[in-house]
Amino acid sequence: MVFVVCAFLSTYHGAAYELDAMTEKIVLGTKYTIRSEILGTDRSFIVNPPEGYESTELHYPVLYVLDAEYFYYQSHGALQFLSECGYNSNRPVPQMILVAVLDDDRNRDFTPTHAPVQGPLRFPTSGGAAAYLEHVEKELRPFIDANFRTSGSILAGWSLGGLFAFYTFLEKPELFASYIAISPSLWWNNQEPLGWVKDRIPDSTDFRQKLVITQGALEGGDIGNSVKGGIVPLLEEKKMRGWAYVEIPGVSHNYTPYTALYEGLQAAFPDFAVPQDVLEEGLDAVKEHYSNVSAAYGYAVNVPDDVYAVLVQKWRNTHDPEETLPITAEWTATYPRSAIAWYFHGRMHQLLNDLDMARECFQKAVMLEQARILPDSEWLNAMRERIKDVTE
Image (cartoon, rainbow, N blue to C red):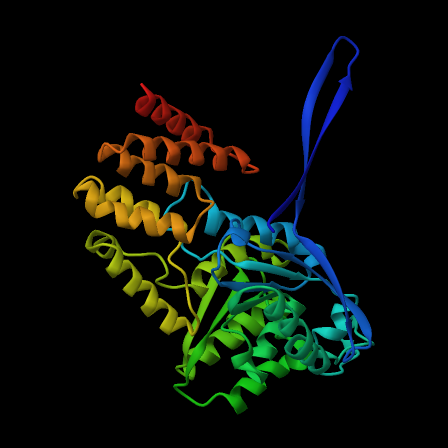
């Protein structure tokens, strides 16, 4: 469930007046703790399914983000804006289940070899990445897949977390469908990861998995030397396919994660949005587009709620309502808690002079929109006006 809401009545006692206010407590996600037999400790993570998850039977990709203690809210905001923002349509990434993973010793879990002294830095517990990867593969992933409707997965990490993402890509590339290594610490142990690439990746390799590497434009030193000056030219020299490099302008190492995840997600989902000419061909063409995208990504991708909206708005201007009604019917069946779906389903019935059904659809749309944590006032006004139209 995306939001857990508790409503209660409270009274504010001000100096000059009293104000009765209905308040709602908004909780983003649910925190889970499981016992890791592999690591011998309890491990915690926060799960936030996409909006509408509980009302559908659809399966969703999973975005695993490391360092949740630092980046959970940023990850939630970037993902929500890219996949669910009401002002955007034909969005660039799909809705996803967010799994934000907390850690009690990132220096241990994210580093692949024991290297206790790195110049002026000390890492006495380093070298635990192999055990941590086994935990992710055999405990964390199975728990998520068993308890949520999943389809494909993406691993994202920053700095040492980016090193772990890159290490996982080399060790078990099939474990995740995509990897986003944000400012990865490829300087680790005298740029040891670059040597692994030279040894393990043959020239002209075409990986099925998508690898996205990002770096802030102001990052220099070890990060700059090992990323822009190291792994990027090495992968280019090897002519490896299926990867992308994204440079984030104007930011240094500590400020890359938010923007880099935002840009990295889009790079991890190339060609996800539907081309305009496909929209003009209709629902069958849209489904074929997402079938092709699914084949390219290696997991099933849903026709998004907002794409139905774009398609219906295009078709209603050029096609008879009887031709559009089956699309809105499928839309409401697929996303039964989508207020916009019921609104357009009502519009088709209204245009076909089935006013009773139109009124019922508009009323349902209003009810669903009002029940959202962040209802859209513009849509609510339009829905209420339509109720007046079919009532009068």
